[in-house]
Image 1: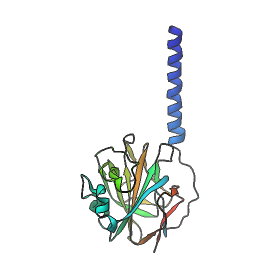
Image 2: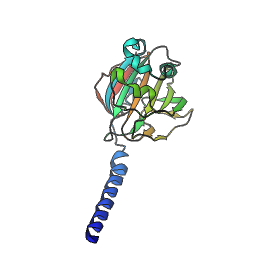
Image 3: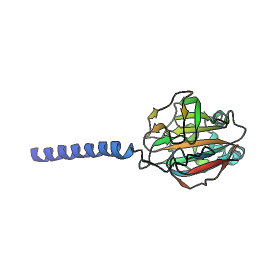
Image 4: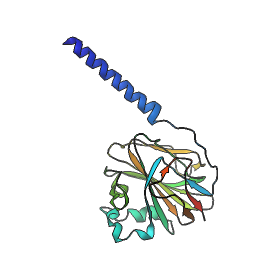
Length: 215
């Protein structure tokens, strides 16, 4: 009996070591990319798959699920925008979880909203997690005073968002701006000075994939 107990303890220790190694050397990885270094484009701030692209004027009755429980969140996120498009990117635990600056810009405001932890993998009009989950919304301005937001959205396992920036910090296109831990979602609010060139279901790579270009 004692021999089995020793084996069980050894197995548990090995599993803990493996989990810690996965977290430190794989989950927290920050691989090098081929950075465009072109401030006329917005590159993806996150890594994996686009699950929704919705223009502000299309948020009508067919998308009313997006308004549940907090009807003002769309207005909050699109404040200071003439028109805006929401691009939502889903991540899994296997993806790079550092968020990157889409272009040269300055962080002008930040709003951390503690709330719920719904399933962040829902798509299109069922994306209530985008608007009801705990999130951190960051508003950036470019040198031309164009606006965009990067919103980090928590999920059941993603209950920690680690800051990198403070208000008025300036960033360049490749710079790391934040870390959200485990399975989660990043939404990108882009104003009408940009043309969206990505498509729904596209797999995107942080730093590399072009999401929008200046008109």
